[in-house]
Length: 408
Image (cartoon, rainbow, N blue to C red; front, top):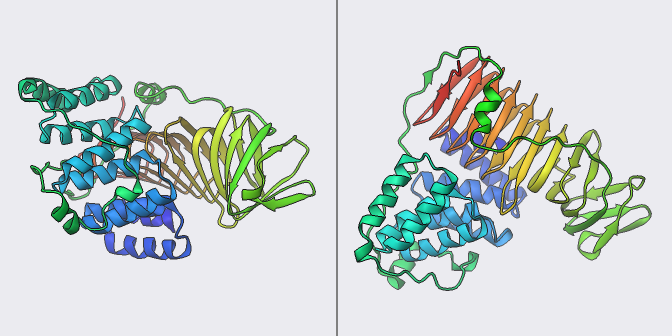
């Protein structure tokens, strides 16, 4: 249901998407990602107060999500509250030092506050991550040209979900509005247009690797040392207790692990987890993921994974790296700066700055500034500033400023 809501929102079917978001959150009110995606859709409709309420709920559940902090900062800034917006954007960049979108938004907001030196520093960090971005170079030059008039902006103490305002009207009484910051992140929708796609050679992966590291092979099994937390149950051998009451477990390959309910796993060491036909293999020494055994949902937050036969998989990068290979899954959702490879899946969605290789999947949506190589997919949709190299896809469409390359 959440994947369908995200897909409808990406296609501007806001009424239908909102109904699904509300139904989903009625059943799972503690799902931080659903609150975030619902809030983002509301913000796209300029329903900023409602969006802030959803962002606040998301941050209350998972406080250190730089993507949500960034969205809160942008929301506040474009409504004239740049001082508070800058604090949220700074918090996002402090958590994730390699988040160019948040750095760019912070720089633009600081310019509106006449903090030109700090804006220049933010753009410099962004350019270190994306050196060919002409627009950011222009903004950096603009900030540098005004250095003589620069003021020092005091970020104060770190912000949290408690600092998200309940009402912009109430905030307006407490804080005088600064100069409005123009929001250029959401271009107007353009009519759909069919794109003729030509067959391509094996240079696709090299093309994608220009903007990201190589995908890693994931081969391992057997947990070593694990920490389980959540509202589910963990059973190892004949020992069973609530997940909150079990601290550390020394697991061998021969022991069986049962997860019931929604459980978050902070894994020190490598391991393999099976739930029915579904399987997760963790390669990294430090992996964080959550499993909802009842709904079949899997969310990966840090580490390197191979997953197969899951109903719903989400890759969400926080301050650590996420590499995910998904095979034969119903729904795969990648956001932030996560990197995925999806094969033989029904639905694949990339948003934020996600990057991926997508092969033989039924429906693929690439949104925001995501990058993807798509092969032999039934339907491919590129939105916003997405860039895609496609071959063998039966139906291809693009909206906004998206680019689809033939890759001769």
